[in-house]
Length: 242
Image (cartoon, rainbow, N blue to C red):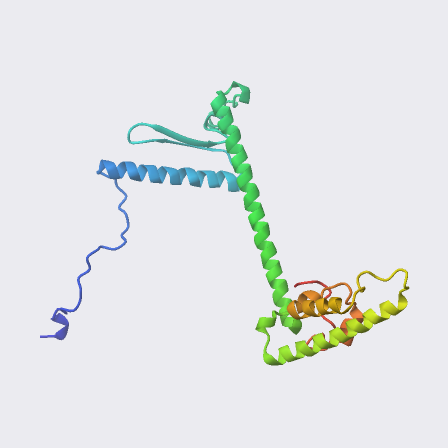
C-alpha cells in the first residue's frame, strides 16, 4: 500500500469552515435578515455621503426595509433631488417643513466641515513630509545638525571641540562689545558676573544645538569654529531646523 493512501492520525481535522464568500440570495432567517439590513443600509448611506462630499454632487438614496419602513438620505435633501430628476424646480427653502429645513442646513454644514477637515488633514500631511525631508537633508549634509544621541564617537569628539572653540569665540565677542560700551549704558544682555557666565555655560552644555541658533552667533564666529560641513564648504545652512 502506498504511504500516501494511509491517513495521518496526527493531522487535526479542521473544525471551522473559515472565511467563505457569502452567497447572494435572500436570507431566510428573519432575525439575521433585519440585522444585515441595518448594517448594509448604514454602509450605503455612508458611501453616499462620501460620494457627495468628495465629488460635490447632489444625490438621493431611498430604501424600503423588509418591514416596509422607509429610510432615505439625500444631499442637499431627498425632495429637491427627486424634483430635479422629474424635471420640476425644487421648492424654495421657506416652503419646506421647518424640521426638514433645519436638517438640510445641518447636512450642508456637516459636509462643509468635513471638507474643511479633509483639506486641513492633507495640508498637515504635506507639511509633515516637507519637514521630514528637510531634516533628512540637513542631517545628511551637516553632521552637527543630527541629534546628539545619534552621533558616533568621532562626531561627538569633533562636536565637543567645536563647542569649546565656539565658547572661546563667544567670550572674545562678549569682551569686545564690553570694551566698546560705555559705563553709563552697559548692554543688559552681557551685564553680570560669574553667575551669568555659569548660566551661559549651563545652557551650552544642556542644549548645545539650541544655543547655536542664537542671533548673537554671527556667521564670522561660525566660520572661526569647527562647524563646517563635511566637505568644508562653510558653517552650514542658513535656515533653522532644530
